[in-house]
Image (cartoon, rainbow, N blue to C red; front, side, top):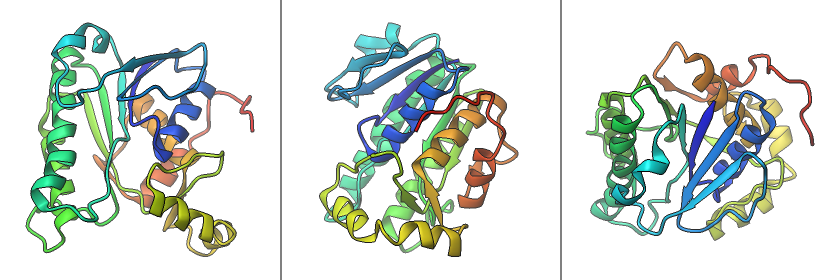
Length: 231
């Protein structure tokens, strides 16, 4: 399987990238981002592309792919709805639309968020915009499109958020997260679970197009083909 990852330098993307390296079914991983990941691996091919709103110049590099894991996202804090829509809806569709044309057999997995508003009419701005983005992706002619809606995410293999406030929050709550995962298993996912679930969905699909926290966790439980996971 040949995989494309957007947002591989972010916390979730780092975890997904790691799981792709570990899974023998994934033979090639391409990343697209404004900067290189700083990671080296035989499977990895990096595309440094400063303009994430236009891809006409690199379409040849975006063809022949089986799956796309779109982990790119920003916080809505301090943004107007128009600004957040540009950095969420417009940016995501700018990549997804050419990918659906170039790779009609592709499975596209989008990292959305718990509480996303599919009606696009709710009172919470970020939830409306995420809902608008999900709905647009589901209309594109991919072989399969799946929306992941995680809540609290626990980084467990050294992944770090690019957002300073999130890094501080994770540092403060780090000792508590393992306990909270036991107490509230339907509220917290790990970066490993999200990565494994994405790969599983790309391999076999899922019974739902929109996967909430419990659905993602169930996909991650599917027996891996390999038993050689490194820590």
